Image (tube, rainbow, N blue to C red; front, side, top):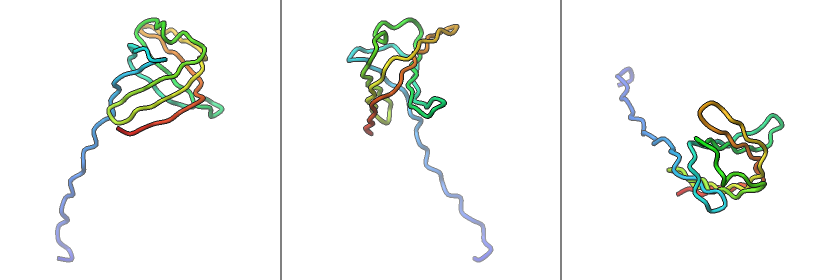
Length: 103
């Protein structure tokens, strides 16, 4: 079977990682989503999207606990800015401590 037909290999479906919850200093936050990115200088940033103003995010330093369907992220961050867009608010933080645990 040198020139035979190749068998199709089934690809394993990897479930999409889903955002489950966000806690800021131990207080549950009603967030739409979050993202960990880097700014232009390469410093890590955390962006949290909410539907409305969130009082729990109005501190100079916050310890976050971000939970997804795959992992738990613990992030220490300092407040940088808040951006108001049409339907939601974006809170931007500079990350100073980060650890992740797979669950």
